[in-house]
Image 1 (tube, rainbow, N blue to C red):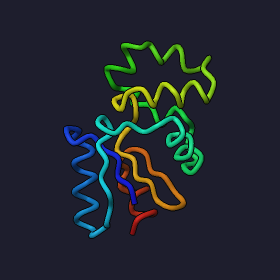
Image 2: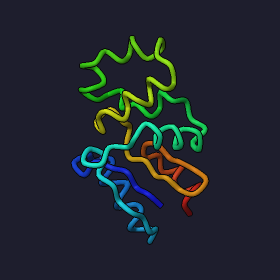
Image 3: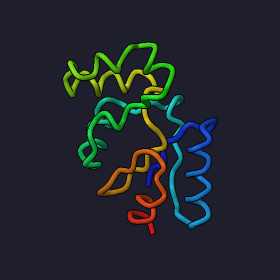
Image 4: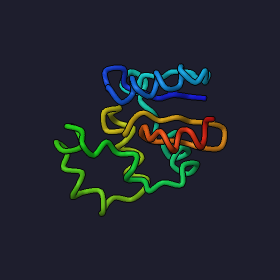
Length: 116
């Protein structure tokens, strides 16, 4: 299982602690140092059954600076995958990638259903 996170993010730290407390093995990946590619994001999105907007860190500075709130509705899926791949700080985190599922953000109930 892949755990994509930003170490300075308090939610990511809570999620990592939760995984460790439940003895769940994972490979950790720093979302800024090793930003997901457009292809990875597209694959994750397809596995997640979530709206593509959920993959954006809508409360982040980069999102606001780029004015994506107003631009996203007019962008194609391909354009959204591409912009997400340009900066790890644009991507909602943490992300857990399993064989047949993807979790975006740390919602304990969702994590318990998929991982325990």
